[in-house]
Amino acid sequence: MPEISKVSVVVPNWNGAGELRTCLDSLLGQSVRAHIIVVDNGSVDDSVKLIEQSYPQVELIRHTKNKGYAGGVNPGFRRAASLGHTYVAPFNNDAVADKDWLKHLTQYLGTHPETGIATCKIASADNTHLDSTGDYYTIWGLPYPRGRNETDMDKYDHQTEIFAGSGGASLYRISMLEHIGLMDEDFFAYYEDVDLSFRAQLAGWKVAYVPKSVVYHEISTTGSRIKGFFTYQTMKNLPMLLVKDVPSRYLPKILPRFALVYVLFFGSALQRGQLWYAVKGAFRGLLFLPKKLRERHRIQKHRKVPDSYIWSMFEHDLPPNAHKLRRLRAIWWKLTGRKAT
Image (cartoon, rainbow, N blue to C red; front, side, top):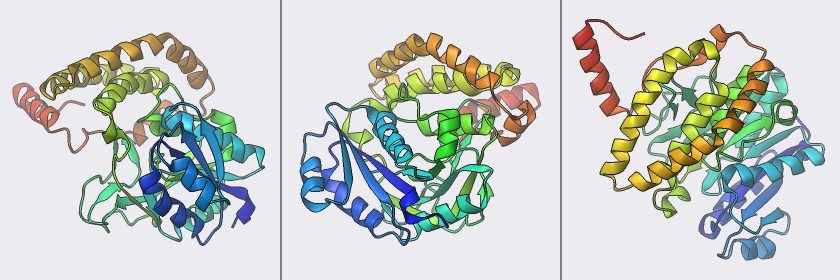
């Protein structure tokens, strides 16, 4: 068990005064105490006032503007490293942790030195369905949270290695972050946690799912406040994730599938009246392409695991909620008389 002074929890916050109190109370009530850091992304509500007046034991880092989720946790990660801490956990401001959430994660990392990330079971705020039990990356170039919206709360109660840990409530080994780098702030929000786990896997670190560690999450509280935000970020970030991290050997298999998905996303955005956000996101992602190709060269050059290991960690299916794609795939299988590989 690590010393209590060796663990930090970083809460990025943007106008989350309505959720912060229950979030911070759950973190301060952990059976393993930690140094709590809130990184405020230029809130204009009472978030800063709440922390300063009611939570003097919480360290506050203030930004003058919203730097997104990645930009909101990275300063906390650096602060934890400067304090000489061993572990650091990002934590959503709209989540509430079970009192032993941190204890189970620190225990796991303390006894598994090859593991760089330990992630937990994330349930809905009312505990009626699951939000995440770790993330997959599929051979269609699509990540997704395992178990999302499933109502069998005990289905994923086995401890296992997983492809990625949710950035909303995972524990990271700081030595791993010093090895592979922090969250990519070009992502701003969404899939930056999958990118970090992908880079960790390539560098030889394991990611583990620890089901005894539980968090309750009010899903998409922040993102739902901004029209088109998820569409814009998705269209921008998914290509960056693929370009940076997928081994060259598997690009010929994944790229055609991803291209189909990407085109269908434009159609879906049009139906929702969000085509402009999709176009802006795609264009912004295109502008990042040269930078991501340079980063790809560095990432792939220094990776420690064989292609076959990464392929074995991919999910060889579509996300469960990809209903249109599943129908198209069924038509393709019927026409060709075989399953695609």
